[in-house]
Length: 412
Image (cartoon, rainbow, N blue to C red; front, side, top):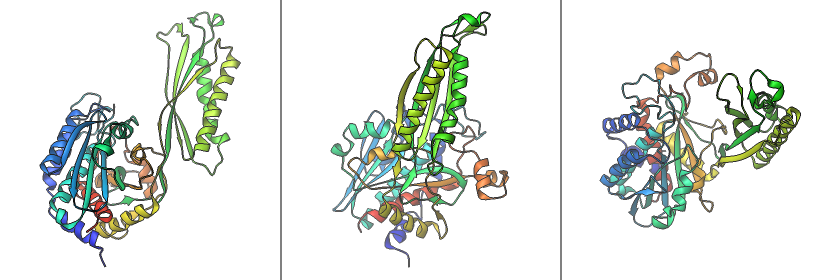
């Protein structure tokens, strides 16, 4: 038997304006904006919310959007979409590819905004079917880890309403038609680390008069690969990525310093602390072995927390998703190493459910190398790829997941 929330969600989304939503998506994709510069994107979302009858404000936390719809007594449910794009040169070949040089919606946030706009309209149009309050949030700067905290610090909950539950979703690679839930840990923590190796510069023809920080940095990059493989227990998941190494200005100049940028992915504070200690120890040791004139500078930068779903909330939302989208469409792949700032919205322990929507176009999935699902999953373009291009067939289902999730948490 279908639950009331599922039946209502199917009724409210039976006649979605799919063509208009696809046009909105194409427009957002053509005009991507980097973190805290999402002015046009925010304006498009705010326009959609005002037309649907929401009390709407822009500029929350910088470029954030908040829309409030009060509909009698009942719980307050927050629906969130992030809005920012990435400094990626698009290479999809799409007719609606980015028109902003060097910037691309390579993570699907344009699709998130489209889903949110469609869900907000559907829920507003069917307000006679539920009671409570909807707080719809267009969040800036997810990619830099700043947006959620900035919106909360700017009084999001004091100015509008404090939610009883948070709901969010993210586009992901995989054949269209699957929804990944995990009733607990679903995404990992992320930590950026910057290292400056100090050497003694000089002429490339006389290396004996210098302390070459490039060589030291190269040894350091290699040695850092042992942190996960030799210092973290096999039962614990962790990733250490060297994302950037910079040094020098000309072929024949040995520079005075080299810079290394790292990113860590961890699923516990214990592992994170252990990795940071290892990085400091290894960097100091390599600098000492090379005779560097100073110890390396190590700076811990941007961090993202772990994303841990409230088990009861996530199971309730996953159950209605399977009713609405079909048996076998909801899967639990366990936690991933990607990171989010969504949980910063859960100030004071607000329960939440966060899930993934697979979006790979059918022709891309079929053409991908591999004999099974996991091999193909590794072969198709993923988030942050210049080839990442979600299938427009996911527009309507992504609206239905938000609508049904909200109805599962609201009162009739």
